[in-house]
Image (cartoon, rainbow, N blue to C red):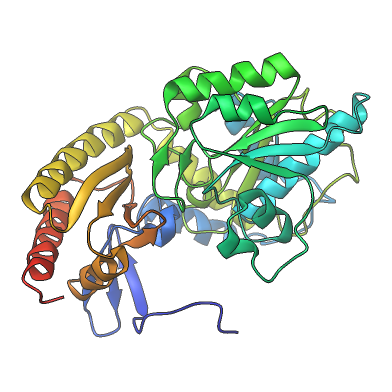
Length: 388
């Protein structure tokens, strides 16, 4: 089915921050499968965990106890705001679980008429019918109508619009703390704190979508920590599996009050293979000093990108983002920059607002930054000279 506009490159293997085609051509991977391969390619600890579990049991259904799933949930609960976790296979499923939980919560607590969720414009929460309605962008919903009812959209980073949109039917707020697809736009710390205050004032649940910015990518385990707040519900995916399809919906016990046996489920979610790899990812990401190194690396990369933008004002306009979730807003079409970078053996991905996303694995070091800046500089000079 032609859902993807694929480029004519096939990768045979990967190693750390590099991917290789069958003929041995090496690419610097600053895309990481769109923020999925958080520990790079073929990380030995993840490979060993997958091999070891593959020789034991792959799948058994959530009808039975899955010890590694329980261990994963306990570790996430210990490291976050959450009291409970549901495992699935993707970010869209994690968001769907959260949306269902929001409606169930209000029904359970005597407010069944509260079902509407306020989201931000330019947001992206997945590609199911419900999550494209939550995203609200025309490019996602066109041709798939009628839209799933229950979502209102306000400007990102604008608390006045948020407050003005609340009605007696409003049940929750759903926000990406750093908009990825929308153009690498971080929520301000004041906005994040304001969201928590608004939710508390009006009796709403606060749900965050940290699918792309979570699992250390922002420089903290999750971005909400930097604002000193806690959500009621949070969707997690991408980096949590390091390349294996894993999603999770985390919640407080109060928010999950209606999620009893039979309320929700997943055939594959949290199966032994997925949990073996996800626990191995946690081993590394929660290792003392790992997130500190991500923070230090991101500052070095951000500084070098600022210098790059200053050197090439006809190509790049500004650096955006937090941690290792960075974006270059372009003067020239960002699609041209992504294509030329690929020609120069560096992988990136575009976003809204004419932005090129830089989402390297969290394990990069100075040598990878030097390599990236050299390719970006070469690409900018080629575009400036008209060789683009």
